[in-house]
Image (cartoon, rainbow, N blue to C red; front, side, top):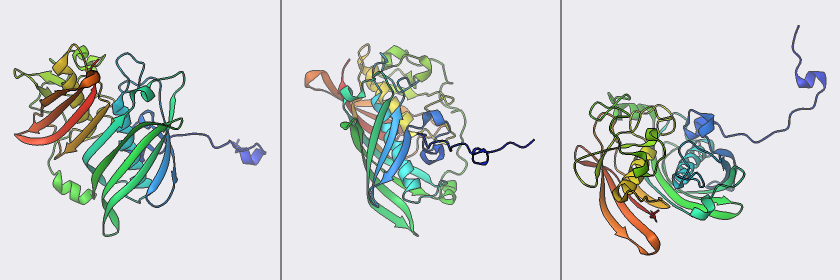
Length: 312
């Protein structure tokens, strides 16, 4: 016996309802980690996106569970940039993104979690576009997130695009497995409370015998930080390591990273130790603090970030 479709039996078609954008367009493996739901082109370089943050997230929530983590705004910027690049600018899905800088500033009051999931709009403006053989090879994107018409966050990302063949040559023989020169996941990391985290599995730093220095030791099976295949340490993991270092420096107090400006110099390799150093601290008025954090491998800078936020 055959199964009839709705149209064959005269039933009304289902209405078009809200869904996420394709996970492949934001380089995610899990649909649950896709925060965007739609996009409208304003012109060739400006786009309006919609999205939603869940009330509870396994990583992007404050320690008390009452607010979204500012790094969720940074992750949303990353997703919006990739979606617009693929869906609107025609960048092939197999191209690789190389992020050179990322900045964000958030309003903590607007990050408060309410009685419903947080619906938001993202305004995207592309600039400084370079094309090679008709395809975008470099791009800068400025973004802002609004919640019920109120600004939640703003910032920008600059990145390059690499074809699969070029990437294969650049990354030839690089491992995508357990680092050999760092402690195994779960061994001798700093206490979660000292870095503003509730769970030991979310800690990405191990202590050293040098004040202000930690070893980056994330769990490579972490469901969010290593949500999909990677042959290097993702930029979001480096941002998390920097935030945790800033909090570890002033523990038992912590630093909420309301804003950050980060420059990336090279890939952080999985098979080499990555040292995270707090290089400068500037207390500010109103209980605010600015902390500069750097990452190094083999004596070479991997990234530098300046984080500002309230001490809690």
